[in-house]
Image (cartoon, rainbow, N blue to C red):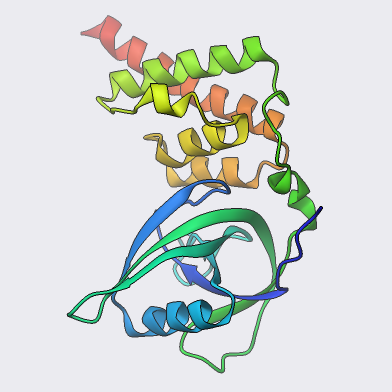
Length: 209
């Protein structure tokens, strides 16, 4: 059954952090307006959005991710240490007039119904998924990145692709492109193309050395 989410949500815009459904994001909150945002969200429904700033300053991308606060701890110096569990992507429709210190947006979720599919083990053909994982492992290895692949293999396809998209050493714009790619199969193809581009660049450098 499709879950209903609020049409108006508090949003934490953060540059350089791309957040995906079915992933976890730890955050260290210390700025006053975002302490207020997290407190308000925690008291209400524990839901808050994350979205990335564009390069031009105060404007944000139209697509972000809604998360639920799954851990909440206050430190002695007043900071909040939280964990967000990704639920679904959203599309920003408009910003709500400011009555609070933080930003609120009217959002829609209908483009991203696939985020709520529970059983996504076989959406992508096994051979295609295996090829993507093979390339991902090589890409991580060449960048000196460690990942517990044994535990990673226990995740479903959606979690695997979103996790790679979130932590891979690629540009913020490329991660945003992946976030905005609606269907999982299309996202897997986009991710593979990005990884193969970087691997090709690496191969060229190795050849020239």
